[in-house]
Length: 101
Image (cartoon, rainbow, N blue to C red; front, side, top):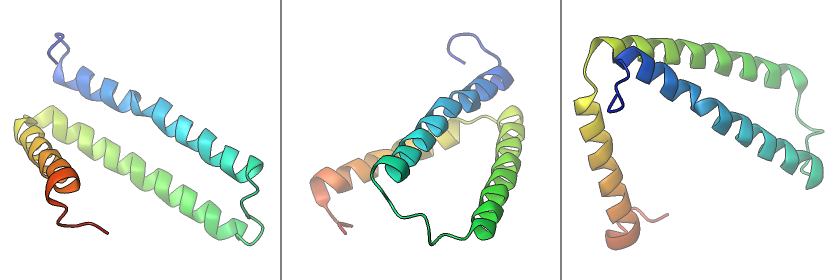
């Protein structure tokens, strides 16, 4: 939006920018399965297919809902929330170490 895009165009662009990351993750996972010999023989096809379809449907619904929300309201509070949460998590990880697993 700082470059002059409308809120709708900025939201559409940000979701489009996630496609390369998702595809890259898929490629890396497939590489691990094929080259590293991770077992896939004990995985049933039907539950896997149903999981993929459910993830695609609900992901699509979530993206549509988020785009509608972004078009209607300002994201300033959400930006503040994510900044504060990110700052807290970084401080916890590298300084306080409260929630170390």
